[in-house]
Image (cartoon, rainbow, N blue to C red; front, side, top):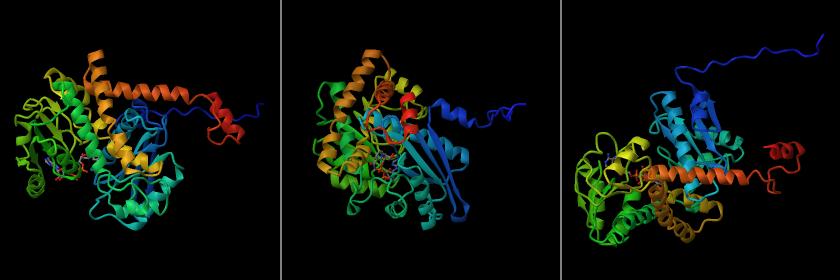
Length: 390
Ligand code: NAD
């Protein structure tokens, strides 16, 4: 008689409604963590897309998602985007993101965020959080009181503070690189530039553009914000929909994602799209190709708005604003390299950028297979064995 108990293999049928593991495998996500503490109202999801280049960094967003599926889809999409952003920016960081399901105006409590901090702490540095939509400094401080794995903390607490100035500077650099490619000179003097949104990034960007004597147009759903920015920078205020039809040299979306879509793309009249918003293209593949066919040069958003993450990465090395700005200025060369690669391979710029990011992840991933004394837990034989086997 055998000593072994044979456990019959359990076949898990993929959920046809929502094949979660299929989703994870499809975009190569490493890990997804569901954090639940009903007693403090916490329902959070942390997605770690990749740690090949380093710890997975990405902000936490609080949003009133209509369904759990919507929250999962969002966190998977955003965490993957962070991997590409870090990779193309030459940073030693992976990609992650977290979402908290709830109304950011009514549902926030100290215990909720402290509980969330503890879940992050349990990941022992695999995931580093930061502020994102629906969060403020107050909640970040609550999280920080439970875990050190928080970045982008206020300057008063020894962090790097508001990333918007560095983000805007990177967008400006990316815009100049696009001008160089499109017109053979990176001077923006006299160019007609339309900025969508009059928030933080837009404000710092407009100040750089004002110094180059551009003809600036600005819009915001809050008219007063647009007027305030216009007064400071000499811009002309236009209506929120007018920005899609106005004859421009450069369109700079700095408000929200998905603005280049089936409804707007046919109306656009510009040579370049270069903005700070994330996920400007509603459908990367389709609208990336359509822009190319229409002769509109797209500076990939996650490349040129990477100043924020570059700023945070500098914080980890001991924050130095000048150095962060100097690193953000390299976005100019990175953007030009992407345009060159797109030309060489006859592909849209967004695809060129994705391929270059993947190339770096794969190449560095191969290098990290070499055993070095920097490997984690070298004193534990089991860990060493596992590492050398991979
Ligand atoms: P913000 O909230 O300060 O500004 C956004 C502005 O856009 C607001 O004034 C809002 O009223 C306006 N707006 C919203 N919908 C609009 C519409 N349909 N038309 C016109 N205006 C509209 O945000 P921010 O920090 O300036 O960020 C702007 C964008 O850049 C966001 O998409 C953000 O995700 C992205 N981004 C920001 C940073 C950063 O460092 N702040 C870094 C990377 C990416």
